Amino acid sequence: MFATGVENSVPTINGGRTRVDEMESCGHYKHWQTDFALVEDMGIGYLRYGPPIHTTWLGVGKYDWDFADRTFADLKRRNIVPIVDLCHFGVPDWIGNFQNPDFAQLFCAYAQAFAARFPWVQIYTPVNEMYICATFSARYGWWNEQLSSDRAFVTALKHIVKANVLAMRAILEVRPDAIFVQSESSEYFHAESPAAIRPAEVMNSQRFLSLDLNYGRRVDSEMYEYLLDNGMTREEYHFFLDNRLKQHCIMGNDYYITNEHRVAADGATHASGEIFGYSEITRQYHDRYRLPVMHTETNLVQGPGGNEAVDWLWKEWANVLRVRNDGVPMVGFTWYSLTDQIDWDSALRETNGNVNPLGLYDLDRNIRPVGKAYKKLIAQWRDVLPTQSMCLIVPVVPPDEAEDLHTTRQKTRAAGMIRKLPSAPAVQDNG
Image 1: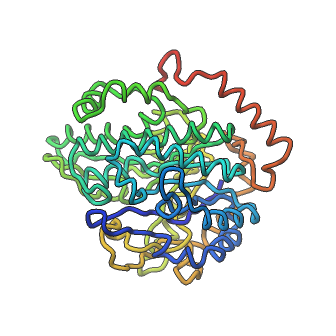
Image 2: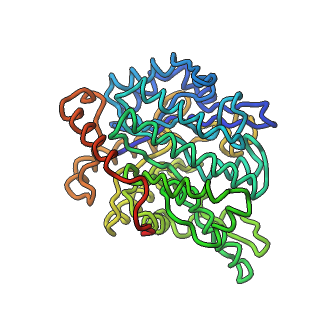
């Protein structure tokens, strides 16, 4: 599955007074038809995409589907498979932020309402990058609640992951053969001195918390104490163990040059650049969860030489092939995003209007060198990989087959399996 995405981050900053809307900043509301045509021209069949949550979800049971109706109808007409991103770093103003204990249950209803309105949609990322969302909102103090404490981080994390789990369960009630791609940042923390080993070890355990909870995997004793010491109750923890939906999931992992960190003795961190790289870190995540893997995000700025992003694309693709050849079932690759972005150089903490040349196309919708390289890569590899893959078929139904007899039978079989399978394993699988 070769993919790209339309950036739909919508966090708030300035104490919740300013909404950062990347779809607005990058011109997607104006150029969405052009953007979808560019996806087609690129030869890309899968698009990470979602409606703007803050203007679509207006209140409890209240929705404005106008933009979603128009855009998703066009995706269906073009037979582009959406990987629907329902919550990307922000919530509507009336929710507040991720400290709201009602968020998970409310979001569950929103996800189900979307699934009911667009029953032909099969693949979802209910909540994007759960670990990063909780970290930037409640540990670094950058977005949304703008808090900086372990208790705020755990609170945001448990609410975000619970929202993701409940949304999966609600979507499955509508679409029993739904597939969920957890787009999550794959991180690693390197100790820069012997005194830094201990804080680095803690951070390397914490990086797994969102997926451990999401997949119903028991955390180690130190992380269990950390969660309970910072506000998670035993009952909340057991919710995740008892609602295991791993069998419906693909582990999507994102890798950027900023995903690896150096850790000082006092626990301070700064970017290390690429040390292990995508292949090694992905193997660590796969060894832990044993799921099919999709590479769900990467990019690099097109630098002064003009070929920096192209070189990064080929390096990432080589890493994907290396992981796949080592026996990890890789099912997809993504350059994110379709167009350049705005103000990610400040992690959306400031509204400076800085154009970040990260896209396959610039904001005038002119193709960049990395776009040409990705189009060539797709053309060269798309017919080769299915005959060699360790995961030959992902049961994806393209939009133009959504009403076929085969699809109906697949949904029926999936519904039967859901009724038969327990929500949690009789014996915990930590493999």
